Image 1: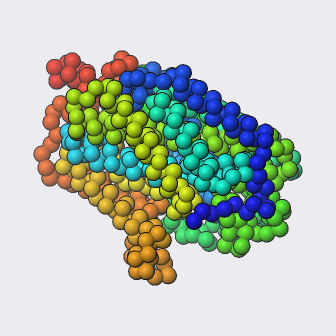
Image 2: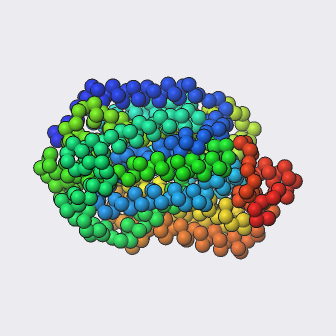
Image 3: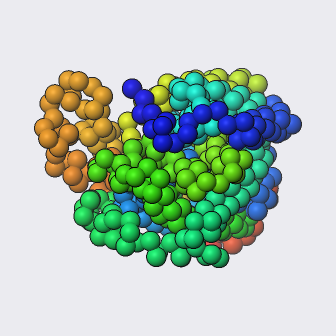
Length: 557
């Protein structure tokens, strides 16, 4: 069952100018994808490792700021008030950890994909397979929220039912991705960033100024509305516990550092210096939207109440989840702004969802074509075969995501948070320990990843699936969970708070009790911290091999 918008209040109808804007934007993505189409694996997975720091920073921003950021972030703040700030804190802070501990080191280690790093660092095909499976799972869960966001905006602009809109938007996205790979996706992400940030900031400033909420700095001036917005904004932790707030923020911070489509951006640049600077630029570009999202949420909540005559909060008979997810577009409409302007804001949401879907689908296709097919099934696969498998994967996961988005299990922002939680529990400990503790070995990595996967899957089965599977639902009580205490302390949205430290302990403990990794692997880890610059196509493995296993002059050797 789909969750419709309230058509009578929200003017869901065909809007000519916004429809033209969205059509032209989608057509431009297809054209860019065709111009930068690829035929080899370097272009398909890592864009030839030739992307500059500003362009990569814009791609990081677009890749990162999905429908969950553009639509869902403001929606969560609008519906949940203070609790929604956990998403802003979590999604922002994670990039500082990336900048300091992982960006340059990942680039120096090299490789094509996140599972590629896991497989080669821990000398284990099984670890590679677990990494590829986790990557696919993250891409699937994360993309459902994006597809849902595209459908909601398409429904608003074109006036059609949400299901055909999801199908059309996802078909176009899959089409240009299958054609262009990472190179075309990166070029498109830079364009998509410009569209989404211009649209979002224009919306915040014009809505704030036209309605008398703000003048030159709506990011701060919206605070004057706090006393009118209700207890969700003015009384923290009354709607949800302090533990859930901390668990959510923790999962989002460390989930950011474990997301394969984020980490792979550092493989697309020439060297570690460019990786660091692209991370800095990425944070700046993200800041522009995140700083303004709470203001847009506050404006939207106040306007919703004024226009519909109801309380904005769902629990009090007001705003539905679907309406919260498009509060950014609705705020522009409720402010009685011109139709073309509302269409511009909607187009920005579409660009955000497509950019993130692109990054996720590319990582999913590389996980299947490179890490599973080439590394585990057919080591003699030609580049043509790998690219074909990658394109087939994009089509297959696109179809699965499209069908799931018809009836998603949660709000856009919550769906994305599930994926972050998984990344924080399973992949982040492997990346961090793999780069910073040379004694982490295969047995430790396998034990840690297995514990992390089981813990996260258990939280989803315990708290999410009972709503969809009758037999499980019948076994739950008022809490809606099979094991209430597990749902309380290991919720799907915040499983990393307990799961990540546990995986660290298991990985370290098993590594200490088993044999140390080979000396060549240790030298590769040390090379990740060397002050000596690398060439465009060089990796730590290349340097160790060229130096006859001595590893050159690493910083701590």
